[in-house]
Length: 88
Image 1 (tube, rainbow, N blue to C red):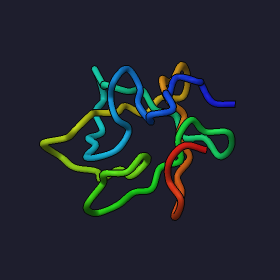
Image 2: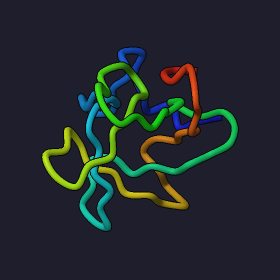
Image 3: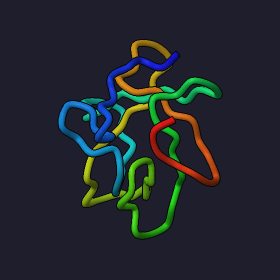
């Protein structure tokens, strides 16, 4: 049923869950677990203009925030979607 850590403004700890994202192995801003149902946020991978809730553009540098994929104790659970990203 999601972790309940995402605000209705699509933020976690003040970090807007939209924009440029870098995947790291340690010290992330947000620990993320991919789920198939009941996510906190539905995420669409985009190649540009990642400004709306749930639109993530993956980059190697100049990220808005960094994520680490985890299997347990995530901060945010996400479901990958092709359309209608954002809060469920």
